[in-house]
Length: 609
Image 1 (tube, rainbow, N blue to C red):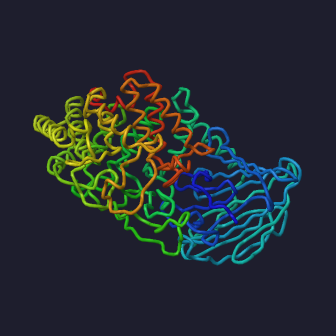
Image 2 (image 1 turned 180 degrees about the horizontal axis):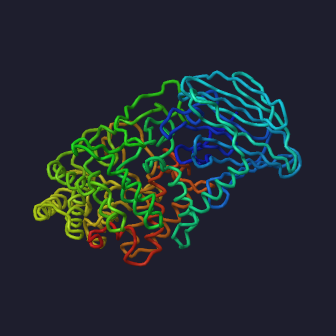
Image 3 (image 1 turned 90 degrees about the vertical axis):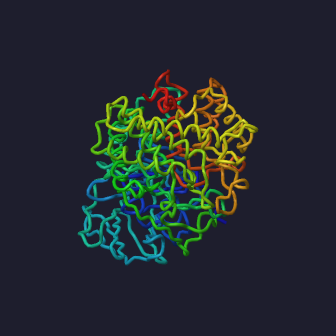
């Protein structure tokens, strides 16, 4: 019986507009073409091989190991069999006129019988395409296979012989030491001429050069450089290059608990990630990416502030309607499989603080001013003045009743605070005195209603006794100093009562009505925030221990999902998760850099002027 894959079995390759997930067994089980949020043509990740998969591996038993080729997004998987050894190199050249997924088999020693098995299924596994083949007639040509359905076409170029078998395309061949055989799969709109085959050797050299040059610009030089660089490469792979938008993850519906219903589509851009992402890119030296992310934020938010959303599509699309794919059984039987995300309709007051903070730090970091950035920020601040005292759904997008979430109120304070500081430092026009008064009133309100004196801790929402991982941001965003007794009490309470075997939960599902059944894993970003707080409080040894524990959660090629099950020791949630990798970069800087340029201190009010 075939073992159910684990999320950590996967590695990714990408071209700046989409990514492919490739298992340790050599299977491409997830690929959305042409964009991150397009319907998948390989959806076995959420179903079976019949829902689309591309396998390239030894025909018999084999042991596999893999790595990325240096600081690149070129994946090398080595298979060892009783008769020999081969390496499969997978990569996607940076997007040009077309999008290609390239797989190259190279014989290392001995002789290995190989099998290529291709099942293209458009629209999340629902559509079987019409497949035709054009065979090579000379040594200068390659075999071509075309799979077409409606607007979509993929073309396979290879010198291997191909045949049809049970609505799939297969190839059986033997690789000897020194042999090389390539397979190039290209996406193109079906109404345009089919693309020519690329020069694989040139494409590989260009792809390697692109990633090595990009990674080489990383300015982090601390003891965790390898982890930081891999996280930044992963973040780069999740940037939609045409617009600069950054998707939260490359997948949908990977579960937060195996077999559960907490399965969401994360192939969109969340505003809650704005400041952490901006600072991670700027601090590491990636100013262009940071500026394009800031510009994306400004464009996405343009319009009436009352219509601001918590998330948008990669080009700023607003309508992200959610529906369930009833023909996919889900990862490890976790249903429903959701496309789109209904949370885009929610109110989350915290997003205004995130955006204001990102815009302020962009100015402080010397990014060239974005057109209309201050006008947008000022309008959003005026909107916060009207709504900050209202209930919302909070940072975690609960589907239960709205409430006065403490974190949301803190971020409303951040929105006003950063507007005040921007006006003061950069001589920008605005009603500063009125904003100062508003800032004080919000602060007083949070301290009066969000803090529980008996618990000596802030709580998830006003009047609640529940804890929440988002409370770890109170000291990090500068609402109170990290050494304030209320911040220390909150961190201690979370360390005592919101930990699961050494990792921080977002909240305890049995204490929070989030409208969903079941539980979830530990949220990795919250655990990084916990380490940040420890570092700012001078508890450096504990902070480093937590950081090392988190680094150990990465899979064999350095990737993180959204959550982690510390008992089963496996990753949970969508993958790879931008927020987790951004948090890793931020914590590495907080533990390494000298004052006053730690990201946590950059966000603090005392350092934001």
